[in-house]
Length: 120
Image (tube, rainbow, N blue to C red; front, side):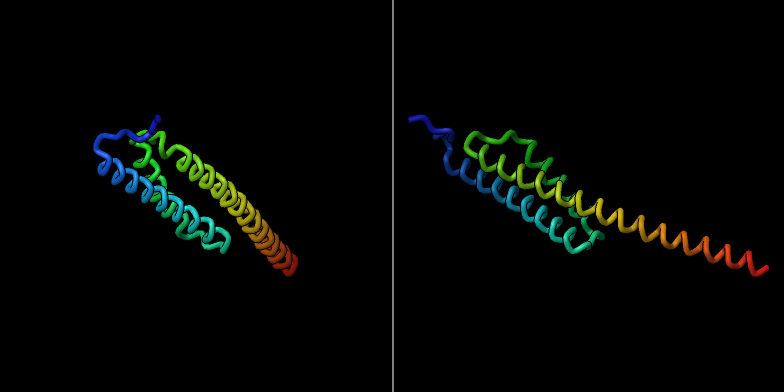
């Protein structure tokens, strides 16, 4: 019977897989925290979390995923991509709201200037 996990040094391999699973769990947890913060419009720390997550992802992929973990890695990648897509959509919505508010403020300033000019 073929096994994707080599039989030599099984305990070291299991430890490595557990460590890699811990890395994936942390990447997943940070991604969920980023999404939660975006949904709550708490944008202040999302960039910091994204930088931390990017470093973890880079570190994870310094070692090629094993066949035994490929399916799990793929599911985490898809989850991260889906969450990122939602975060981007939420940020674009927030950006449009901010631009609308800025335009209202600008129109108010213009109206004040026009009123002040008409008083002279």
